[in-house]
Amino acid sequence: MKKQNLIYLAAFAMLGFTACTDAPESDEAKTSEAKEVTTAEGAAYKVDPAGSKIEWIGTKVTGFHHGELSVKSGELDVKDTAITGGSFIIDMTSLKVVDKGDTATNNKLQGHLVSPDFFDVAKNPEAKFEITSVKPFTGSVTDSADVRQEGISQYKVANPTHLISGNLTLKGVTKNVEFPAKVTISGTGVDAIAKFNIDRKQWNIVYPGKPNDLIRDNVHLGIALKATK
Image (cartoon, rainbow, N blue to C red; front, side, top):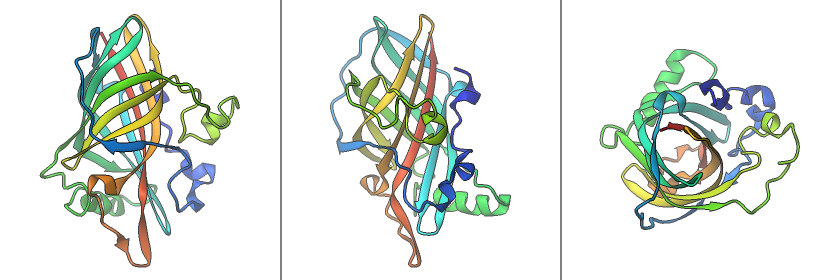
């Protein structure tokens, strides 16, 4: 999977999302307390930062903002064509706002997001996701059979293959999240993609926004990983 095929947020403004003041209709990650991480079996596939990508959407009463984060490093453990574990590091210093509009406005928002009001990046320059379990996906996805789904609802993975659970550490807080993902494994590489919403307050990100323009609690994440032997 080439890097350009992982990008899906830039089309939102053309897909009617501009009028939405709530988080995208995506899979809601099931959040619980951190779980034990067991030793994984199999071969370690190294995550390729250049071929991986994280994108986010935050919403408020009057609209939305979206941006990107870089994957710093990581590995996925594979045994008998199945993922058994793994982890990756998110470089929080790479946080970008990529809204349409002037650069100065984006930079101002970016500065606010890295401040203690939000992610406090000076104290927490990295975030981490560590897999605790991987199961075959057995549920159903709305419109997953519709060939237009990836073009219309780009904030939901079509035809997920696995249900992944893992500990997400963000701003020094660790919670376990569970979400559907689409995982493709070959003899030389792994491509994984997931799109889901989390409640930012679970990670002590509680800045409310302006009284007349409150920030929604749900934040949308799109994660695409590429790993090679």
